[in-house]
Length: 339
Image 1 (cartoon, one colour):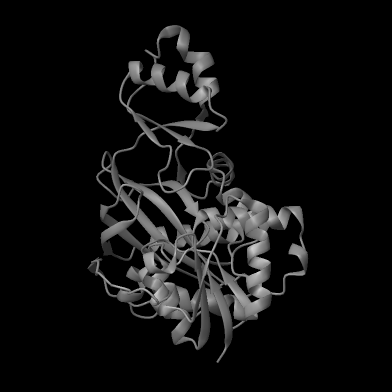
Image 2 (cartoon, rainbow, N blue to C red):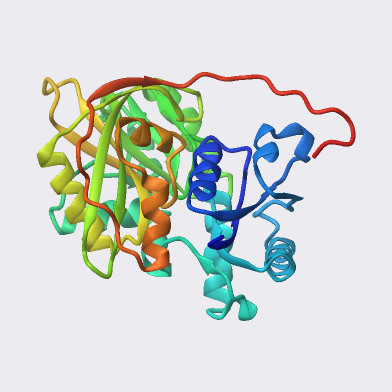
């Protein structure tokens, strides 16, 4: 057995693939989730399951991680959602030693996460270096100050309003006309969140699984076109394809950001240009919900993510099959007394 890993948020979209990948590599898997084990089908697949406080409850979550890691002899932590990534990032910034935690946190460094979890910072970073096409944004407060007096009549529509640190399309609003812009600019300015305004580009969402080993500089990228998505942005039917130029662009971006392990870049493939024009949307600094799609097509992102933090390096890309891949759901029952 290789050792024990802690997988967070085992009810999330990527959890099944991550748990399976860890098991295949010989790890003992400890799982946790904010919901009881009986509510989470993936709890059947882990060796031990814990009820976790939410990552947004910083002090309680830090204490929980420290306690579980000590009790279970955890060597590696795999955070699966942005909430946990943010909680661990805050802990690292508060205390670089993380209270003496001996487990390796399997995610990129603090500076990289800071860029990835701030849509304004990463857009500026990438555009200044001319690494990809980006969608310039303006702060909502500035839009209000410059456009409200004219009734927003000088703006083109549709526009997108979204939190600068948003996740899973939460808090995102599509604005179709000046009246809607007037409403949302007034309503959202009263909140504590910071919002960006960007022109909406029509097209398909392109998701790229990216895994990079910073020691060797090796990087593998595998894109897919999302054909069906849930309301919070998780793909349920996709087409995995190859695009040498896009993959090279993602490799350059990953190197500039100093990505460590597996992340997920999202783009919009513009319909206005007839395709092949990709506009960067965001970087999710953890596994994509559809990371299993890459494995079906021929490359195991979970295994190679772990290989980076084990010091083994990543495997070459090999043969990838371009294909449609769809996800389906199954029902599982757990009686009282089962965990």
